[in-house]
Amino acid sequence: MRLFSSIHEFDYSWDEVSTCNWQKYCPWNDQSTHVIAVDTLSRSLDPQTHILRTERLITCKQNAPKWVKSFLGGDTSMVYEVSYVDLTARKVTMCSQNMTWSELISVQEKVVYRPGSQPGKTVFEQSAKIIALCGGWQKIKNGIEEFSVERFRQNAAKGREGFERVLAISREVFAEQRERARREKQGMRL
Image 1 (cartoon, rainbow, N blue to C red):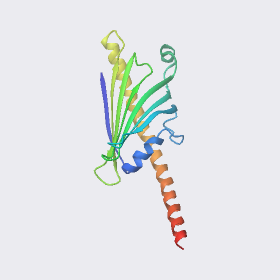
Image 2 (image 1 turned 135 degrees about the vertical axis):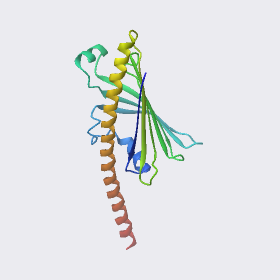
Image 3 (image 1 turned 180 degrees about the vertical axis):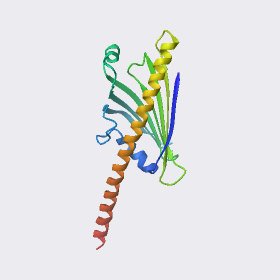
Image 4 (image 1 turned 90 degrees about the vertical axis):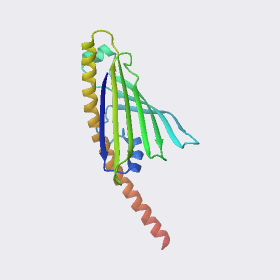
């Protein structure tokens, strides 16, 4: 088993980050071109806790050597994700698990967004547990896990970079919308 963890602080408010989280795989995120589809399987709001729970299936095209693709049966993979948006605690928690190749390797990821220590900042915590499930020599399992953790680390950095772009573009769009609404409101008063 190998573990990965990372903490980053975005220069955006929790409101911005938690809203943009739903668009992180959008077309203008040039770091998420591997994501083919994001399908919402279910969404529910707990009437007592007011926590929004969403289940999604994320389909990705994997960039792997040809021999690996032939061994694994293709280059498309699926990830099951459950997210919880807690407005009271101001916390978004996303848990994901690979579905494809799960008999060979288990990748369990957890992401948490919460307000930072300063206004207008959001803490992003990411962790993953990677376990090679193939039988055989421990040396092979260790190699698979080490390779997978390094690949996860590289993809996590690209993911943060892409999400920063989504946040920047969204901030511009929201600012334009607020300005337009302000002007319309002033026009109504005249």
